[in-house]
Length: 147
Image (cartoon, rainbow, N blue to C red; front, side, top):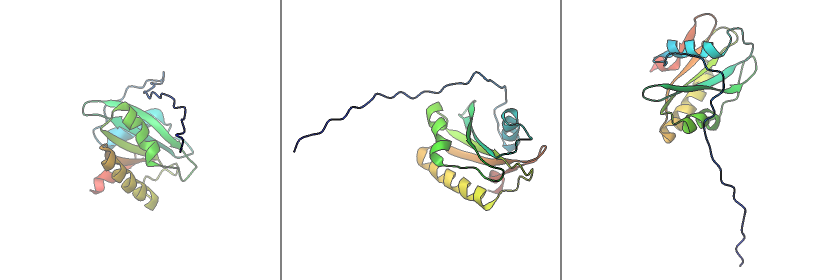
C-alpha cells in the first residue's frame, strides 16, 4: 500500500495588540473587572457582549471581545474563550458580559456556561477566576461570590 503525502503549512500564532490602548488597573476583584469591562463596552450597548480579561500573576495581559450576541443571549464556546488566553500566556481569566436589560442577575444559562468554562480551564491549566455580569450603572454580579 502506497503512502500518501500531504502538503503541510508551517503555522505561527502570535498576539496582535490593537492600536487602541486603554489604561485600566489589574482587576483584583469583580468590581475591578466590571470597571475594566466598562472601559471597552459602552453602558448603553443593546446587545450582549462577552469578553475575557487575560491575567497572569502580575499584570492584566489584555481584554478580548469573544462574542457579540443579541439582546438576551450570546454564543459561548470554551475554544473561543480560551484561545487568546493560551496565546497570551495567561494563567487566569475573568469572563465578563453585560445584560442589556440592566439586571445583572445570572440566568441558568450563565451558571451552566460558567461551570463548563471552569471545567475546560482546569484541563488547560488556566484558572477561571470569576464570571462577572455587568448591569446598569455600577451594578454587577460575581458568580465567584457564591463560592
